Length: 54
Figure (cartoon, rainbow, N blue to C red):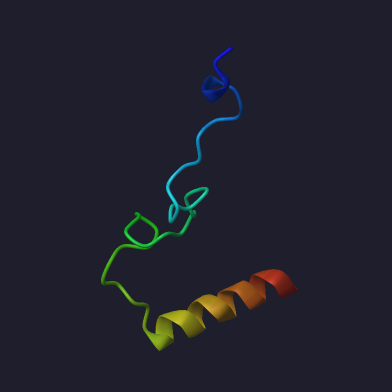
């Protein structure tokens, strides 16, 4: 019997993520080199608070 062929699948790379994040850098939702300004951030936070309150 060849015991080298038994067992589970081989391990993946050591430093690879298990899954892709929905807001990872370099995607359509979060492109590289684009940082939101403080005014945009405050506007988004106020809209979220108003939506939650309503």
